[in-house]
Each structure stands twice: as C-alpha cells, then as structure tokens.
Length: 66
Image (cartoon, rainbow, N blue to C red; front, side, top):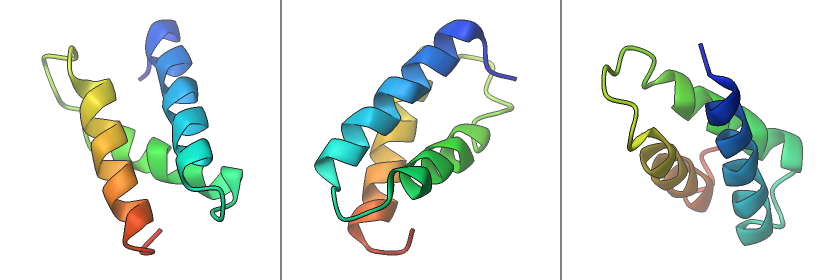
C-alpha cells in the first residue's frame, strides 16, 4: 500500500508523463503508473520505486502498448 508520500510522488510522476505524452489520455497515464507501481509491491527497499515506475511507465507509453 502506498504511503502518503508515495501517493504524492506517483501523482507527480503521472503529471510529468502526461506532459511528456500529451496524446495519451491523462487517465490512461495514471492507470499505467498505478500498474507499474504495483509491480513493486513486494519490494523491501522503496528508495528507487519512483524512478523505476517512471522509467517503466514511460517505456510502455512510448511503445504505444499502454
């Protein structure tokens, strides 16, 4: 489950990706970010989750697979 800090950061990631991919609906960007975030649910170390989620979501969005 996301902490309030992680939730804030994920919103920022979604905002950055929405700006980077203006042709993708904002709701879809948010869904992709949430899905990629949940890929790290079992991660014990949370320090790099933001970076990894943004990278993975951007990769998926850039391939048009989103």
